[in-house]
Structure formats: structure tokens, C-alpha cells
Length: 73
Image 1 (cartoon, rainbow, N blue to C red):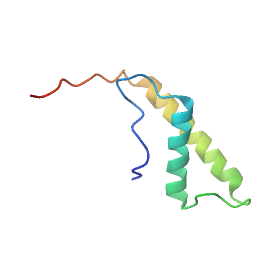
Image 2 (cartoon, helix red, strand yellow; image 1 turned 120 degrees about the vertical axis):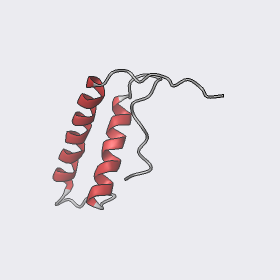
Image 3 (cartoon, rainbow, N blue to C red; image 1 turned 180 degrees about the horizontal axis):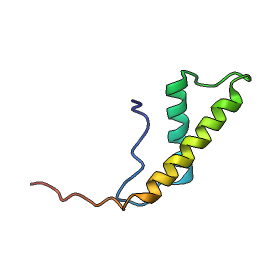
């Protein structure tokens, strides 16, 4: 859907809060069609970003750590 959202579940450790928030912001921008919302839509936009960031955090915390895949020769 949005190529600029990078995978947050990696083998190098948990994603930071900043990475999760950035991904949530990109998602809401893509879905809403707004790069920056108007003052009228600002509260709804911010609430959506917060909700998605919280859901993403819960999801990542509930998944097992990602394992490295062995290199193929």
C-alpha cells in the first residue's frame, strides 16, 4: 500500500516508538489523502495516528521475535 513504510518487525530488535509513529503517520496520510490536515480535520487525523501507533505497538509486542533466515548458496 505505502512503499515508504518500512517493515517494523526485524531481526535486529524491536522498533522504536519514533519508527512506529512515523509508520502510523504515513499510513494515515495515505488513507486520508492529506499530507497535512486542515485545522478542521487536525483532531481526527491526530487521533487516527495515535490509534494506529498504539495498535501497531500491541501487535509487535504480541508477535514472537523474528528469526533470521539462513543464507542460500
